[in-house]
Length: 370
Ligand SMILES: *Cc1c(COP(=O)(O)O)cnc(C)c1O
Image: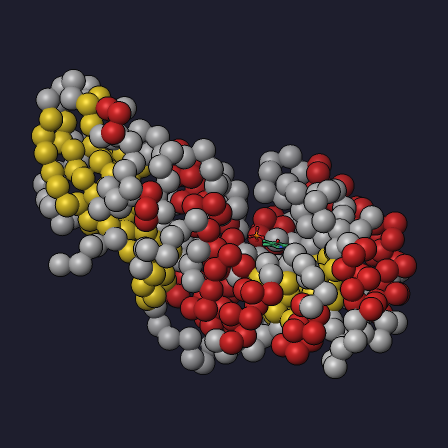
C-alpha cells in the first residue's frame, strides 16, 4: 500500500472562496494572487481553476509568470516585486506580463527600454509599509510620467499594500487609506489596495482592483479570531495521513526524540506517517491539535522527519490505518500555526514537493466570468 500522506485540494472550496471574494467586492476587478506556487497548493492547478473568475493574476517574479504562461494560462500576469533586471522588460512585453514599478531603478529601465510592444505597469506607492514603493508626494508626477511614456500602455494602476489590515487595531490601516486617498486625489486612475484582510474587513479599500491571495485558499488571515466574512471561507487544502503504529505506554514513559513528552498516565500512542519532511512544522509543540477519525487528539513528542506521535488515549477504538487530518477541513491551519509560533501562510508556502497534491472537486468547465 502507498504511503497515506497527501495534501488533498478541493476545487469546489476554491471556487466557493473566489465567489465569496467577488461577492464582497462586486464593483472591483479581481486579481488572484498565485505567487509561491499558489501558496504551496500548486500554481498551475490553482491558476487554471481561478482563471475563469479572475481579471488578472499576480505572481512574485518573471520565472513564476513564465511557468504559468508556458502552461497555457492566458490572463494578464502582474509581477508583484517588479523587474529585477532590464532584460525582463522585453520578455514581459512579449508575454503580456504587467510590471509593478516601485523604485527609481525600475523606472529608468522602462525609460530606456526599446520594446516591440508597450508595457502596462502598476505604480507602487509607499503609504506606510516602508518596504517598497514611491513616496506618496510623487504619485501624481509619476502617474503622468508613465501615462505619457511611449514604452507604457494606458495609465498605470496606482497601488499600495497594507501592513496591518489583519490586526485588531484599525489605526495603521486607516492612516494608510488616508495617505493613499490623498496621493491619488484628482487623478483619473484605477487604484488597488486590498489584500485578503483588506477585501474581507475593509470595504473602503476595494477600489477598482482587489488582490486576494491567502483567502482564496480558504484560510482566515485573521488567524483563529472570528471575522464575519472570513468565517465563510472553506479550506482548499486538507493535509492527511494515517496511523501506522499503535502502542500502550505506562505512566512516566518518554516518547520520541529527546523524550520531550512524558506520559502523565497510562497512554495510548499513535504513530502517524507525516513529519517535517512532508511540511508538518517541526516546532509544533506538544498539545498541537490533530484530528484522528475526525476527533481531536494532541501531538505528543517531537516531530520527526517522516512521523509524528499522537496521544489517542481519549479516542475510542483507534486502529492502524485510521485517517488523520493535520490541517484543513475540521481543523483550521491557523490553530496549528499558533502552536508552531508561525502563521498559516508560512506552513502552506513551505509545503515540500514530496507531499503529493491530489486535486478533487468538480471540473472547472462552464465557470462564469463574474
Ligand atoms: C502577496 C500579496 C498580496 C496577497 O496578500 P494576501 O494577504 O495573501 O491576500 C497582495 N498584494 C501584494 C503586493 C502581495 O505581495
